[in-house]
Image (cartoon, rainbow, N blue to C red):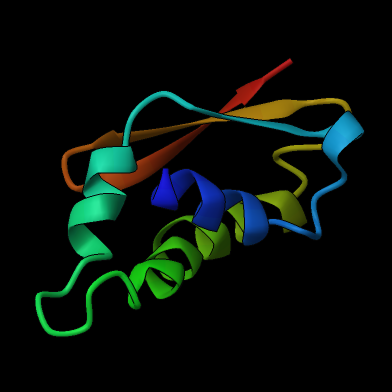
Length: 86
């Protein structure tokens, strides 16, 4: 639940009706990387930004994903993957 809330609030710049994000896998990886025994879930937002948002933003700037399309975010071999949908 905490991860879903953090993800939803960290993408305010994406227009919801014209772009859809779906998670295929990777939420457990975000949870593992975003948790620190000392700091709890404080690093979670940084992990989402660095490992998912920044690479996705680069692909959007390259126009790999445009208006009316969506993206499926997966996780394979220690890396997040982005697959265009639509």
